[in-house]
Image 1 (cartoon, rainbow, N blue to C red):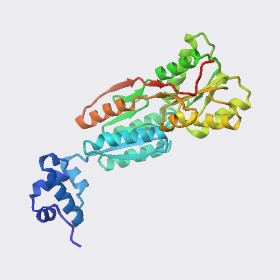
Image 2: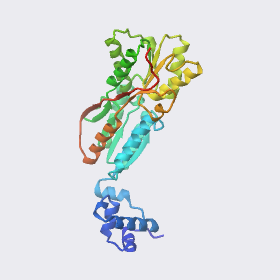
Image 3: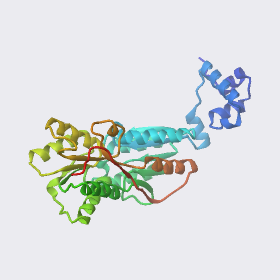
Image 4: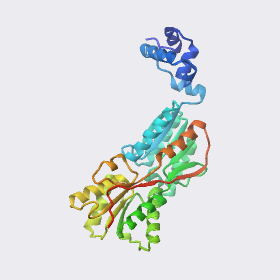
Length: 338
């Protein structure tokens, strides 16, 4: 069967080849809406599909961006992906997603795959496995540099040289959340952290400690349980707090997924939120305003984060350094005054 060409579409639609080229190369503003509609209808009728690889070789631009995250099923990462996709689509840029499932090997695989696909830019949220030691960080950085793609690190602080990263001010976020609990009368605040080698977890723990220090409350390591940012780890850590008879009156979970695990265990033990114990999360996922009681949570400014990274991509701006964005505490009914 003969391959349908751009010339076939132009002939059938009775327009110039140049007009068809404009439409399929992101320059449809140069033709009328009626012409665009007609050409797209004819292209669909004839089964025409533009050769994106050939176009990228010719123009050195693929109009694609690669995004690698630890777990696309995690509501926080999927929200980032959705916002990125919506923003980039406004510029006729397609987002390709790589789900590393928390492994360095998959991150490297996706970096190499996206490089082979000639994406114009790469955005990566490194997983805990990639950041657990200097050797793994060096391996990830080496792969990123060798692939030759412009890239930015999202939601993490790393030891990489000469790159751009953008992250939430997790020290500030954790401090205002802990301060809020203290001002409501809570003193024995348990923490369910993320992985101890991930910058967001390190910073949130430091923010928690800063708030305790400001109110002259001694730090108690027995109140700290290390999770993995998963719902299951929230369940496990909460069960440990109860089984070990730890005295606590509130739980600060370092993300909402783990906070949902706290809710689950408290329900099984007939512990009332907030009458018996308070709960605060982080990320302010969609379901946090739907569960009962509604979860108090730290809301990251994802719109600003996405706006900055999208502007870099569209304008081909080379930035170096770290951009920190302050989050907001969203107060709901999972905390009450004592």
